[in-house]
Image (cartoon, rainbow, N blue to C red; front, top):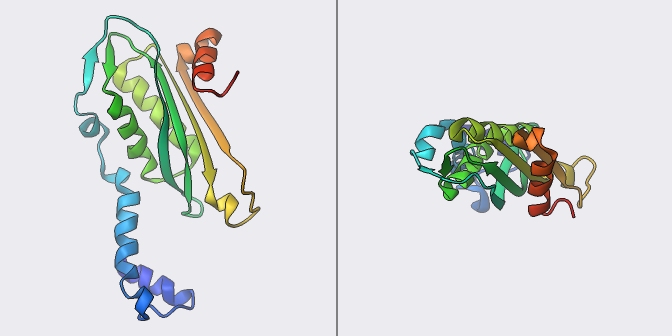
Amino acid sequence: MEELIHKLLVELGENPEREGLKGTPARVAESYKFLTQGYHQNIDDVLNGAFFEAEDSHMVIVKDIEVYSLCEHHMLPFIGKCHIGYIPEKKVIGVSKLARVVDVFARRLQIQERLTDQIANTIMEKTGAQGVGVVIEAQHLCMMMRGVEKQNSKMITSAMHGTFRSQLATRTEFLRLIGTIG
């Protein structure tokens, strides 16, 4: 990867040997390895069996989970927040594991729509929840730095499964609690 970054710098019209760029190919390679580590993570290893019996089936919400990902179209960052809600069916998942699920899928070249679905599908499948809702709000640097250059645009995606899809009251409660509706 370092050789590719070196060639990229040359193609951009830069001198990869100048003082400020001497270590850049190695730094960029390490950066991309970190930013795409989700390709090399197994969701079951990440969850590590962190499921616990639950007597009740009240809605569980974790909101404002930071999301950092790379747009697969331009390889520029999109940054935002993910809100996850689910209604357990006899087992809950460790709260930190929800954030780790987000990171596994965000640390890949992505589109926000797919990322939202992957998070919701995984939580639904792994917990056997009655329902799952996931909402991601993000700003895309590909829209801010280039192209249409709209600095204040925000993309919002949602995935609703089970009771979050079939029961309006459940969906409304979730959206109200995460603050997307009044």
